[in-house]
Image 1 (cartoon, rainbow, N blue to C red):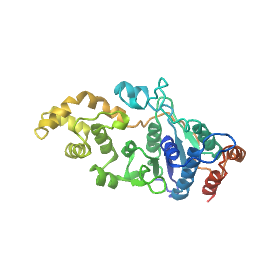
Image 2: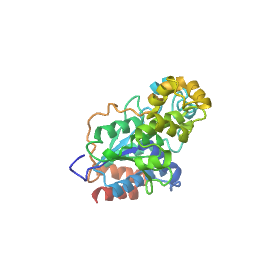
Image 3: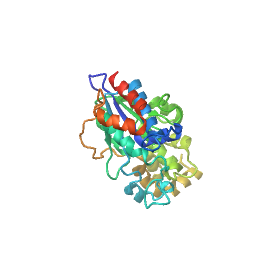
Image 4: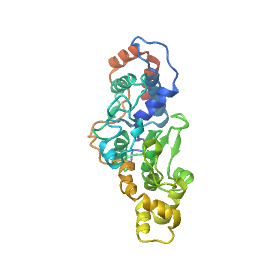
Length: 311
């Protein structure tokens, strides 16, 4: 760990936050640009809240350059298939009033001076995984997301935790540590959570899982055999404690379990470069901020971010 106790890295699952802002912030009054702005205003408010509350010294807005990478689809063709927009070849369905707001969020992050990082052929989760692993022995890492998939990165020894926004938003997130994982899911590490998630599956991501095996059964198997690999080794060796319908279902899911870890586990080696990810102490481009504030009616939202940076 760093001797500088004040150092802290905040990793933002950007799409998770701006989708939440879009659905959670009411439609705002018309602005000079004529664009809807509720998601932008909400995103900036979330940013101000996070900076004020957690005092990060480094921040990365992690981006989905590819929300459905082909290498994951090749492994499991149903991966996120139901989210593909009907009117495009491979684009994710995004509400009409949210789409024009995303470029404004990009411009806002640039004006503020917050690093926005994505990588071709990778999801934001993979970018988050890469930064978390790169910095986990350097400083505490907070991951802000509404996606349970990132629970796999939780690690108490390196103070890597998830601020899970699905219920309480950024103002009252679930703080996911190993104790949280054990209490809620019966697994004791982030790695064990990833193995459990692979067996359980996730209909929201098009991952079928093993029929009849949910969180509780998957956690029990991992506890008994140490890991998904341990479960499969015991199954192959004819361990008599895995029997009946449970054995049959695991055997039937063999092809799925061959590839599920590849899809479920986030990448740790994404080419994210070595750009500056330090949080600025003030807005880096005041002129650009002023222009965006006037065009999109965001003066108050930008003021809150500026106040958070300066405090």
